[in-house]
Length: 633
Image (cartoon, rainbow, N blue to C red; front, side, top):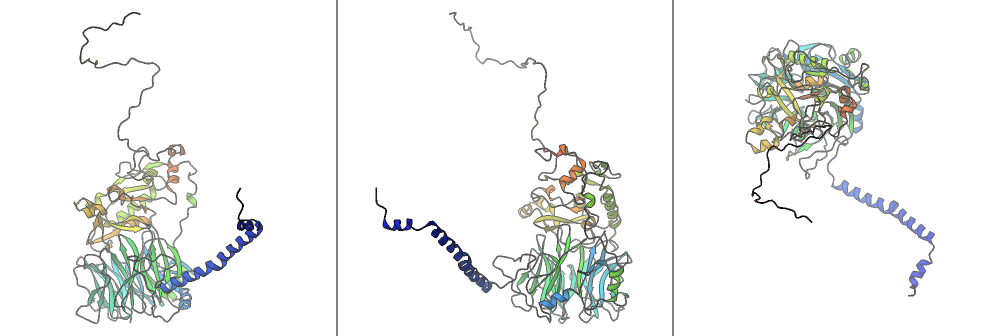
């Protein structure tokens, strides 16, 4: 046996509790001394190398990983504390489509709910506040046509600015309040005109004369420039018209191919221009600082309709079937206005900042109509009604393979059908590609939970798209592909619909022998002429939501599902199925029936055995000449 070294003998003589104390002291040293020192060094290094802010409400989006967003420092008489205090007096003025009618609403967070400003039955869009904060200019359809109006917030008087059968919209004030620039649809094209408010009898001045569409003007606070959207390059981009020069008056500001740029807005000091941009349908808010030589495009948050007020950016968060109003500080990225649900599509946003609420606003808050902005699911908590399961009943005067609907949504479909026919001028929903789908029929490939089985969905006839009676606009929301449908109105005299300001998506382009169009599932086309009605907005107003495309939509045409709408009423798919079918019918390894590639013969069960009949005898290739005998033992 080898002797134990002296060093090991010494270690063995140290008591175990001493080892425990030394181990605990090492842990304390690492946790409370070494780690804080490392973290402090790391944070200091990050502060020294970071030159951009990241809003707390949404991640910063850049063109590439190498791009960084510099800190926005806009000269303003307000500091951060004052901005938060002023925000308490903000009155948000926006146009929201509720129950199939866009109206102007006012909203003061924490003080007054979303309230209708005018007690009238007319359609109202594109509100904008005058520079002195006393008037609102907007576009309304009061005599059957879209015209520009001015409403005085103090004495509640109204002034009509335009009176033409053509569409007039998107008014914007000059800084001195003496002129209005607006978009108008004349000679089958959108252009920008300027009207003097001192003399309404004077002829308006035409600012743009290009053959391409020019729209959405916004007057700069310095008074010398007007930003607008133009399709002069073949796609929507942000341009600027300089009013103090004649030569080289127009310049392309965004100049970003494969992007859809729209809804421009100036910063308070005219140094920064904001707009909403889309690439492959995904909405973001971008901006550019015009006083810098590099003119680098900056990306801020996900949203549309930017409105900057004293270093605070307000905007609309656009989801697949809902919209939210919110705002962040451009100085530190803090949330100024928490996301507020809006009960419909948005057609304009502006903010009134004042210490005293105008008389017209006060009266509207006291007597105005407040829409129902939250869905009440109490009626849908129970899967079964008092009379049992829901019934699938037929719908009269409906052309479809199975013209049936769930009895809970039959009246809602009839309402959508009648309203669409009234607004568009022709019965768009008289014939459907599919309505109710029996559980015995196969679903579309990839559609595991098809709402057509519930009787709560329908698919309109896609032939209307091929006949140029409808167009499809691609939109990306929450990582999924959705579609917005516009219908061509029957009467193209300005009494129905509005000019289209979005480039449609041609799903049929995949069949044009173009590899790129085939891989992308289609391509964008130029904005068509004429007046169009947003059917998706109309459907959402009556509770019919659009559905996302299937992941295989680029290679499988029916997977796009651009023509399917669902009225779920707060139910998930399984609960909606249980309204119609017993639970036993849904318990299956395969949730939906699938097509069997080859037929399988089911044997017939019999209580006796029958002889097998040989139809054709088997021949021996070489006949046996003599039989073979087995010898006896």
